[in-house]
Amino acid sequence: TIGTPIAMLVRNKDQRSGDYLENDMSVAYRPSHADATYDAKYGVRAIAGGGRSSARETIGRVAAGAVARKILKKFNDIEIIGYVSKVQDIVAENVDEDTMTQEDVDSNIVRCPDAASAEKMLGRIDEIRKSGNSIGGVVTCVARNVPAGLGSPVFDKLEADLAKACMSIPAAKGFESGSGFDGTLLSGKEHNDEFYVDPVTGATRTKTNRSGGIQGGISNGENIVIRVAFKPTSTIGQLQKTVTRDGQEVELRGKGRHDPCVLPRAIPMVEAMVALTLVDHLMMQQAQCELFPNEAAVEDLPNPMGTTAHREGGPKKAV
Image 1 (cartoon, rainbow, N blue to C red):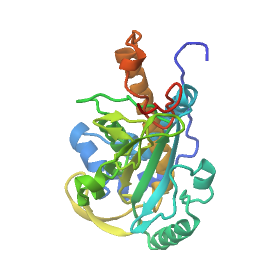
Image 2: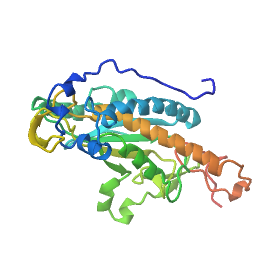
Image 3: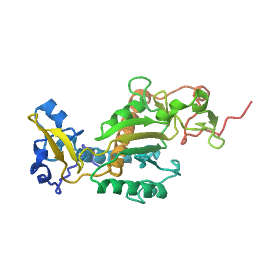
Image 4: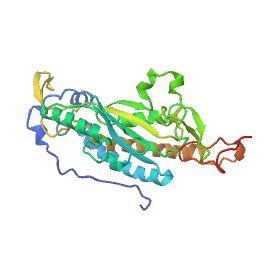
């Protein structure tokens, strides 16, 4: 780079506008798609491809996310890996989020690091595809080596910004951080992540990670774990009841190229939004808390915290 803003242009040479313009989709709203709401808001909609409601717009996010990932890697060797953790009711099993690699995720077209679960997921997706229908599921994303201290206590909580970023992705319908909704089934004693001192680094760590690497809206140095739920693709090949722009009730069958399951394609989008959010918080941390050096005596500073933290001299010796 030479210090000027980075610009990227992607020319889509594989568009097929005729798939949308030469059939009933040019006048009828696709159920659960953004067609009707865009028309209600703007009085006009992009019939050929859906315009900004199409996942095509995420190419810009993913491109910017690639730059953000380079910054994160250089800053603290931060890595972000997403994978398909659930397709409909099929849940990925035997996934170690501390050690899984990008190669594990990319070992199959479903992008699930557990081969046995991936095979079941693929079978379900293929079954749905043949029927002209679609299904949804969940993408899990893990950010490793994130230092403690990112995020703000109130309005700019790290998990709140991650939620907003991920929920802005097309077809996203739910967001969880750490234990998420399953955490409501536990008692406080069961849910709390107890602290301990790492015997090698001397850093403060947690024995479990139900907090998903974020406590009080601030990263604690453990893996950040989030999950994003994606709905089934709206445009399907089965006949559905709908209305036209002028208010006539009709039936519509979707045409064109539409995934029976968006999950494998959604992973880079989730990873990109997590990367961009983390870089934003790194910059805010630098501006808000590290503009001037902390000149407090070493003995007055809190013990270093997290997977990549080290206490000078190792663990504190008991007195």
